[in-house]
Image (tube, rainbow, N blue to C red):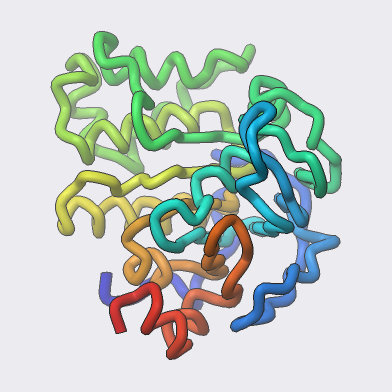
Length: 274
């Protein structure tokens, strides 16, 4: 994408798709591997050290955070621990040191299921839709924790992704890669999440579809939902990012706004192709 069309026009303008609560201020410290000041961040994985099961640590004092209405992007080379950091925040691996907090509450010990109930929406990179179910059935599955009338939320999802309304009675497995990703994001939104986490949302899609998905992600952020995203398309992702985290070997290597990281000569040389 050429830039962020909403960089000066963010905020909680349509809160109907999200739960409310929590405002924080995060101080950027670009060009360092130090932890960020994060006491008031809405979602924070704070100085996380840990790994899978009883295996070795993959993350080392890693900190990532995001506030309402923001897009925070995690980038870095292959094997840097990007998806691992997000899975740690979602409770899918052992955080042996550090903590995870959501809206001021320590959720470090909660299961992923309990974190969903607390308001975390997570979209994995693969196997993120029910291919044999229709598009609408997939969205209905996203509302499994709700006991209220979710038809209004489904209408909002269809407004955000019009192609899904057109194909609502079609098996999701017959859709294109980009459309499947829209189904996955839409299903996560059906829970009315407090925060949305996306693991490689543009993996395997064309540049045109990538731009369209990023546009929709910006629209979601404009409703006030914080978005934490792992991306291999680092340059394009940083263009829309309010915060960027460059990880190397499970550690914070560079931290700053998307604009700051794009302008940093070391980041450009090492991670963005010059």
